[in-house]
Image 1: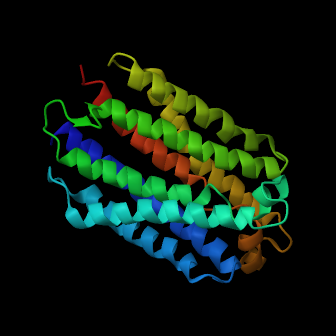
Image 2 (image 1 turned 180 degrees about the vertical axis):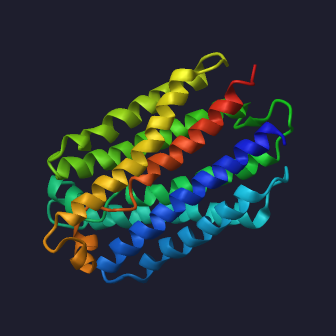
Length: 270
């Protein structure tokens, strides 16, 4: 199989994991908001479609864009952009505007970005399939370089959202510093990979695997955080809503998987 198709399938898988994270998280958060605005159902629909598209694309070995999948991914990007607008309005429409209190407790500004990333990673994968097997290119540059830069940007955006929420939690546990240390370093290494000459990057590969592990370990810490709430998991219907978001950490895993795929493609380029 062509290396660029293998990379595209990896991006489909990454998109699917991000979509699952968005679906689970937005379901909980919008249920807590009682779906007061009908638009709050949109990310659930879009994330479900992106999840299905990602799983389908991950098994598709054909070197050609799938129009339906590509359309679903574009819809996810649009939904993420519009969702950011809604969340921005929610923050600025409260007393205090861009106060820390509103950034902490109003609609999270970074949450719709995960849906945008899911659609973006999937759309990139679909566009990559249409490229020739030899010297594939995206956005006027070698495909591996473009993919590495996209992953770097995604890691930085996700870190910003996590950093804000962990700051709200006053970094009560030392492990809360892990994502704001590990992920930015992974982003820096991916940027170096994109801008440097193509070659083996053992340190970057190792750090991306550590970033992928961070997502699973983060879920464990969040599950522990829910267990420490009053009533623990016996009172799951309340504590899942008020405790740390259980499906959020796998966003790092999804981006790390995409980064590993970009790394493999980058080292074969000139």
